[in-house]
Image 1 (tube, rainbow, N blue to C red):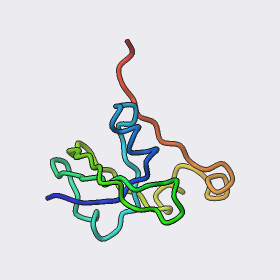
Image 2 (spheres, rainbow, N blue to C red; image 1 turned 90 degrees about the horizontal axis):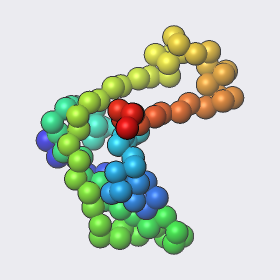
Image 3 (cartoon, rainbow, N blue to C red; image 1 turned 180 degrees about the vertical axis):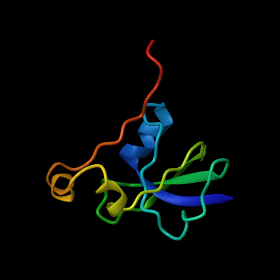
Image 4 (cartoon, rainbow, N blue to C red; image 1 turned 90 degrees about the vertical axis):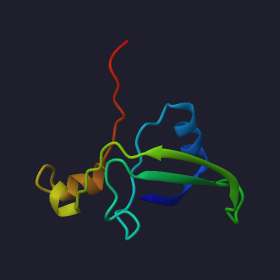
Length: 97
């Protein structure tokens, strides 16, 4: 399956450079059935201009792993009020050099 999504410039550039190796998304209708092996086509949108137009650049990535969580799932690990106060962080990981 091939899925097309918009992405802002700063996130697009980090993917292109290889610095960013993850994508955090709302599990909307387009992504509910997405799985390992599917192709995610990320279409860059201008994040500077107020009308946010597409730039014409895109990057294609193969989904290697997908994890889905609800707020209720996360509340099993952290109190909801702490998540709201502190927010969450997601890391890309690689082997040490």
